[in-house]
Amino acid sequence: MDQFSPLEIGLSALGLYFIVFLGHTSSLYFFRWRENIFKRRMIEEFIDNLQSKIQTEEDFNEIVKRFRKDFGNEQ
Image 1 (cartoon, rainbow, N blue to C red):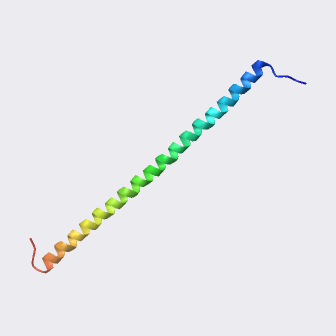
Image 2: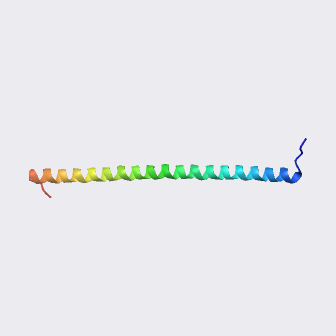
Image 3: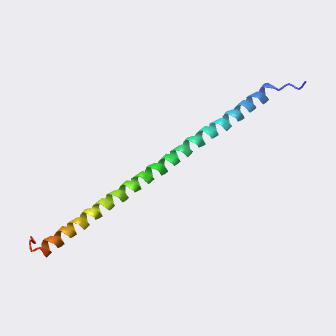
């Protein structure tokens, strides 16, 4: 029966620890990357929504000005 030396066991444990460490670290970076993408999309949607509301407000103000001009109540 073949027995492992303490050095082989130690190197195997160190190698296993390194693999687990790399897997854990890469998963953390992956989830942070996905979270950043999600946050960026939310910010872009918020800005688009805000721009749409601003454009609607400007359009509304133009309509009000046109009505005031058409009906002789321009200020």
